[in-house]
Image 1: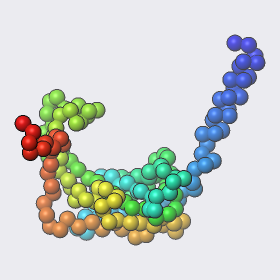
Image 2: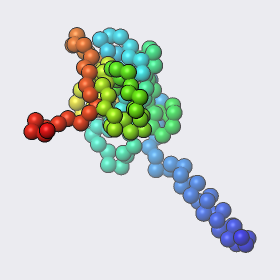
Image 3: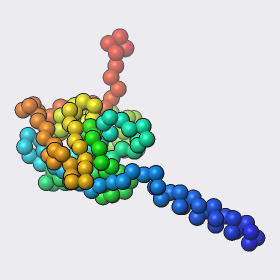
Length: 170
């Protein structure tokens, strides 16, 4: 490779790297919240933050996972980086396998082998559109600081991941 080709290639690499810095990324704030179910912390819940109202210029989702105390810190691009200020609809999901996994279960293609899952947080809470949970993120924190979910005293729902069948299918 001649010197000119090498310098051109280095220029392109530097230009691309500079463009990946995220000049068009929104500013992020680091906040902490807590998720509770029936007043108790939820360990290992996955939280999904959907901009409300939808912002066509910003589509990257933010997410978080709660710890043993139910505490979470949203992240957007990298672990612990924060979330853009604004109003968000929030989905909260926590499930577990209800039975022992079959020997032929493939975690890379879970739909190929139906299993039963137990919803440890009520299923409607998993979808930001149906959860009813809305938070506001600002430089001063998250409001409300606690996401309070209720089970209504019902036991966790168990369902199969197998595709549902129509009544007229054999």
